[in-house]
Length: 128
Image 1 (cartoon, rainbow, N blue to C red):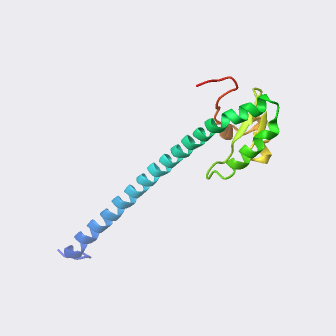
Image 2: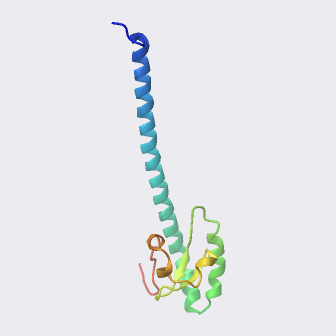
Image 3: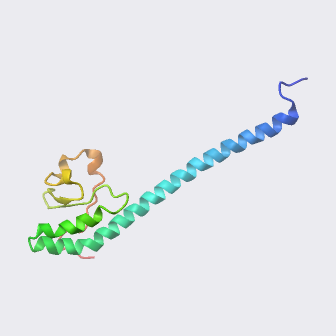
């Protein structure tokens, strides 16, 4: 019985194809794991940064000096992968943000998908 491809070539070719498929699947799975880990690290870093500047922001807003938060938000522009950082009052009005188009808007006016990404940090008077 003759095969279109001799067996001495078909077996190594089959193993090579199987190896390539397994490496591709492994690469895709590993890439997803790395992306999830990086996202988790970015969220942790953003939360840590938020805790660091929370006291300065709270002090400025208690003094009624909303402009004092400007330099803090200017520094946040340099943080890689940070899409937006914002401070809002109890009613959900955005008082200050790293993006100018968010200032003065309400969180509820954002799309449902985007509103899900807002993380509530420390509220004035909260202590950890």
